[in-house]
Structure formats: structure tokens, C-alpha cells
Image (cartoon, rainbow over all chains, first blue to last red; front, side, top):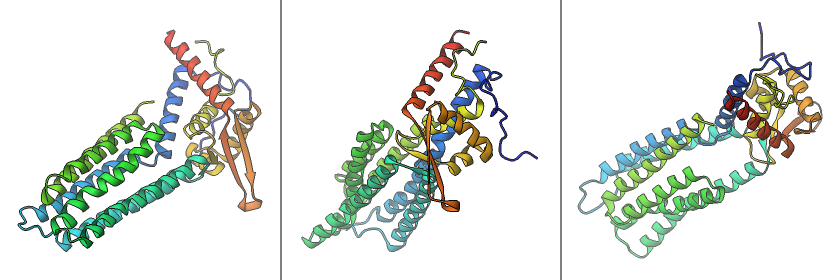
Amino acid sequence: MQGPHEIDDTTTASDGEGLDPREAARLLDQSKRDARRQFSLSPPWVTAFGGAVILVAYGALWLSVRGQHPYEGPNLGVVGLVYAAVAVSIAVSAKVYQRATAGVSGPSVRQQKVEGVAILISYLGSPVIQGAMKNFGASDAIVYGVIPAAAPLIIVGTTVLGIAASKADWPQFGAALTVVTGGVVAAFVGPSAAWLAAGIGLFVGVAGYAAATSKRFGHS
Amino acid sequence: MGTDSLDPVIHAPARLRIVATLAALPDADTLSFTRLQDMLDLTPGNLITHLRKLEDAGYLTSETTGNGRASRTSIALTRQGRAALDAYTEALRDLLGGL
């Protein structure tokens, strides 16, 4: 039985003589694609999974607040579901990150860690604004509706927008811009519709990013 | 079809895959020997032989840190190696475009 590939071209200097240029081109293309896929921190299937989680979570949030007069906010069951969905997404992302960066070291890995910390810190922006609004006596519609729906998209989206621009990652830039736009729309449509606008903005951004990265992995 | 214009150091299946894999990493990043072996599904002996050829040509660098079981070998494509892969890709395009 043959174990790992014993490509028998280790002994002579002209060991590629039998390799046809067409075959070499195919091998080169395939190797590049395989490597990109394996080193990727956001493979298309993970992004698509994130899109599905967004649909379920924001859909549930919107359904739970639709038609509330006065606005009271999502019920605790839905909030629990959203937290569970976020926890699963974080666990999947952490596993993918661990696999993608195994054995890799150098400046880009350090850069990714710094970017991760920046994004995590930016997540704190929304609860801080919520707390301040609550402190100043803002209504539940603002504190538990507009702010939690719109602010994370605007704040975290803008952080990712900056990171994407610094790396000239245009698919990520486009996705972040879409998310920020969704957040801006959510800020102006009222507390119930804010969840719908935020969900649509996030889903379109994430699904678009999944499509763009899928195309990148599909072609060299 | 003539392959004289193709760099013989790269124009071998295993070495082509090694160089293409390392080129997918950003500049100055390194990859551990074990991860590279895992990705390419080559035996350690086979991989070492190919890495040595590429290192002799100045296309990659390797550095081993630690001792015994705790040792770790990191491999990185050099600027020269990246340029060689670009030139190889260009030569392949010319060859196939001339069909």
C-alpha cells in the first residue's frame, strides 16, 4: 500500500522532463487554489453558514417585536436563541481560524490577531451607547430597539471597513460597506423595522462576501 | 512541446506544489514542516529531498528551532523563489498560448 504520495522525482535534476506543460499548469492552478482554501480564515461555507445564522437570528428578533405598540423589545426566549446562534458562530469561526493558521507564523498572523482584538473592542461600542442612552432616560424603543439593531452594524462594520481598506481586500470592503449601510438604514426606520433592516443589510453583505470568496477560490 | 524555458527546479510535480503552496502565504510568513507535509501528503523523506533542492537554488529558507521532539522546522519562500514562480508561470503561459 502506498502511504503519503511518493512522487518519484527526487533523484535527478531533470525530473520534470515527463511533466507536460498543460499538466503543470493544471497542477499549479490546483495547488494555488488548495492552498488559498486551506489558509483562508473565512472560507465560503463558513461565511454562508454565518449568513444562515443571521437570517434565523434577525428574523426571529424582527418577528418577536413586529407590531409592538408601545415597543417593549425582543422576548427573552428570542434573545437566548440569538445568543446561542452567536456562540455557535464564534465556535465555528474559532475552529476554522485554528485550522487555517496551524503551523503558520509571521507578520500576517500577528496582524490578524490585532485585527481580531480591534473588532472585539468595537463590539463594546453598542452596549456602551445603550448604557449611556438608558442613563439619560431614553425610551425603550431607542435603548432596546434602534441602538442594539443599528449600532453594532455601524461601529463594527466601520472597523472592518478600515481593515479591509488597509489590506485592499475589496470583497470584504464591499461587504462591510453594505453592513454599515444596513445599520444606517436601521437607525432611521423605527425600533421594530430596525431589526429587519439590520438583518437584511448583514445578510446581503455576508452573502455577497461568500459569493465573492467562492469565486476567488474557484478561479486562480 | 518543449519545456526548455521552464525552470527545472520548479518543473517537477512535488516541487511545483511546494512552491505554489508557500506562495499562497503572505510575504515573510513561514509554514511548519509538519503542516506543509500534511497539506501536500508527501512522506517526510520525499519532502526533505525536494525542500533541499529548492533551498540549494535559493528559492526557500528553512529554520529549525528547539531540540529533539520539541524541534520545529519553519519554511518560507524567498523573494527569489517568488520571482522564480512568477517567471515559471509566465513561461507556462507563453508555452500554452503558443499552441
